Image 1 (tube, one colour):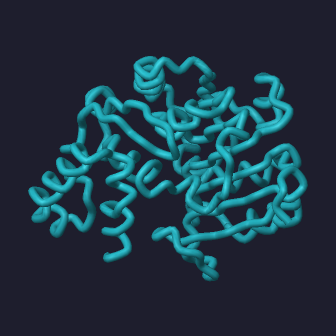
Image 2 (image 1 turned 90 degrees about the vertical axis):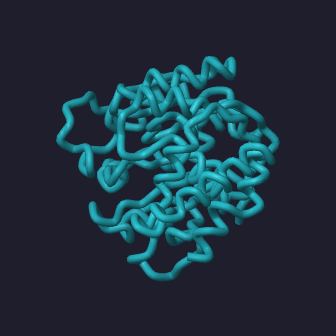
Length: 269
């Protein structure tokens, strides 16, 4: 519980949100304590943090219109929950030591509302937003447009079947075909959060030799994570695995994220 509070409310939250929004975050959190205790999660806080806010992360500043997102996407989760994960907890870059300016081509597998893509648009030449559910396109485009970003492409496709959304009918592409369609010789950073489809994705033998960095959320109920780890290791990647608290773990059943660096394409030894 202490680790979770630190991850969500620590100094990095202040840096990311700025003093005014951070104080409002603390205020609505205090108001929501009864519901937090009852539900065991802070979704009630996310619901109240549905305003337009400026984000500061890794030297970049941009705007998230949480109100627009939550009004147009009716789900039992809210945009600020993604702000906490992607920006405050920094789940995709936390264990990568990267010069962001070197990341020219970025692919966001499982783009959802587009918050990772929005961050990447600050520094990359091209961000490919891959999301099988086209209901997210509008809010993705809205946030890109209010920040004057135009270095993106949208792909409403499956890359890897199986997992939570396997029942959907949608076009499927391989990663190799996606790279060909967008003239990508190398993917500098591949973010993966595809709700269990990651196991089918790796079973399909993606061109790992053309990927520098990977950050991936793991959904263990859909497959054997050790097979993914073995494939990455055999393909020349150094890997780090962490639990839900983003702490390095040696226990397979606790793995929540994998960070991988291609030794053949980077300076990592």
